[in-house]
Image (tube, rainbow, N blue to C red; front, side, top):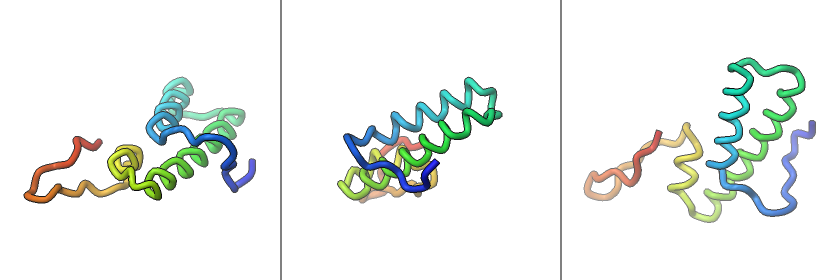
Length: 85
C-alpha cells in the first residue's frame, strides 16, 4: 500500500471515513486480520486527507469532530462551540 494518499476525485468527509474505520474495527472484534489491515490503512490515509482538507477550507468544527486529538476550545465568553467527543 502506498504511503501517499490518492487525491483524485472528491474527498469524503472525515466523519464518514471515521465511521467506516469504527465499523471495520467493530466487525473485526478489535483485531484486524492481515487482509483487513490494508483496508484499515487506506481508511486512515483517507481520513488524514479529509481532516487536512477540512482544516484548509476552514471547516474547523467538522475537523475538530473528526480529529479526536483536537483540543476543545471555548467560544468567546466561555461558551462551548460544540459537544466534541
